[in-house]
Image (cartoon, rainbow, N blue to C red; front, top):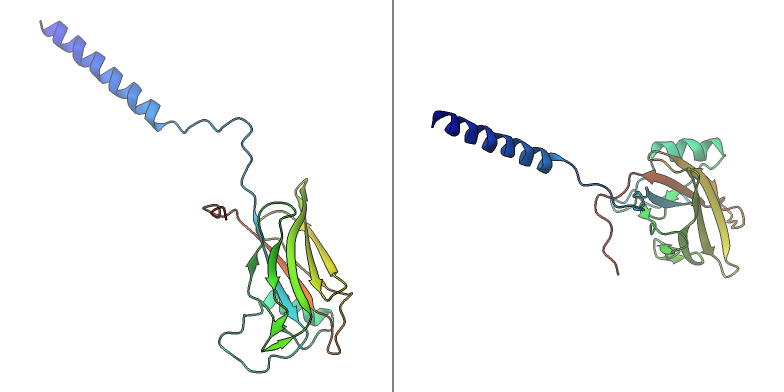
Length: 178
């Protein structure tokens, strides 16, 4: 009887260990599931001195300031905060309505991921004026990558507008479908 009791305890213990081990395993990823894409953010920098040090004015980060000064741009203000682009290739996001402090400077600007391949990404921003000017920024598709580019086709007396692009990690939760 004691042997039978000990044998049944051994069987129950073995089943408990197997059940625990099965629960502890991570689910197998689905075949063909795509990895999450890094988030892409853009910010438009306008070639004008900020009229006031308004609390609501978006901040210009030090790395952008350094790059602008190296390129000879002394006066600038952030026209937008960081705007996340849609994660899908060639899906446009409205980045800027071309208004700054009540003045309108042209046409709305839209941004999109033009290409994403081989660890590189191309971001296109288009609009600016009725001619549909555009700028393309190419950089490494990994969190922390950043670049600025002048919108050379758009000239204003105080200088050129710039676009800053920053790659962040994939979003924790994908955006809800609209």
